[in-house]
Length: 178
Image 1 (cartoon, one colour):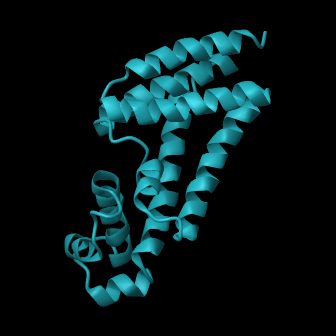
Image 2: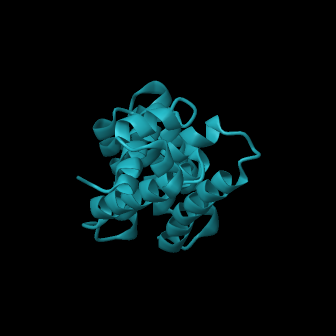
């Protein structure tokens, strides 16, 4: 049986992703992870600290999955377009749950600065990846914004239609670089 900390984290991974931050209570995590309250607080001072752990692990998982999905691309353009295909794939696998980071961002008050900073740091990593690959600040910013809005709108409409349309726009934007 996994150690208590691992059970707490794996339980939070499921619950925070599926239910969100506000709808997931510490008592539910404790019960489903089969740990004592004392054990929970031995590993995490607060629900916020556990949320930060969740965000970091979720980013590692998400970035790894994106990297695997796009690794066969032979050109930057193909890699960028495949990243939008990745969104379609993850929507199918996760039933249009959307972005865990933006879901949590929408739930927490501005005063939870540590969580806000973690979300910004991870979103900045994604922006930097686009910037590094594309080597054009304006076009990479445009594509990043299309990528993020594709996640949101596909969750809202439970459809990949706007991801497909974004891919056409991205293809056109990338063709201006050559």
